[in-house]
Length: 136
Image (cartoon, rainbow, N blue to C red):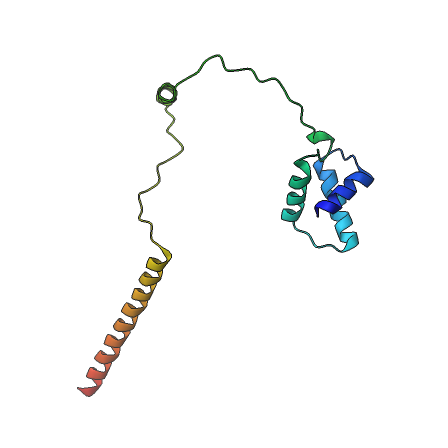
């Protein structure tokens, strides 16, 4: 898929957008009867884009990064966030996960097997009760 994409970029490029490139690639794949999925196309794009821009809208321009003037400690950041929440009345959207017990696949299988055994025992007890009623 990457080779088809690369060839397409050389013969019909440069493309203005990734959508244009994607449409052209899908058209070529259909014409050549090459099966593809979106994952195949994305993988090919990632491979090519690792060293070459896919299209003109993806050319990266480096902007100067200015260092932050103020450095806030994690404790101070928590305090600021708590104060904002207190003033606005907003509760945190992230809730703690409930405490649960992790079980292994083997333990899960044991639980299922035990449930099957219990169900069979209950069915056997019911059959015995029916037989005892019939004998009376």
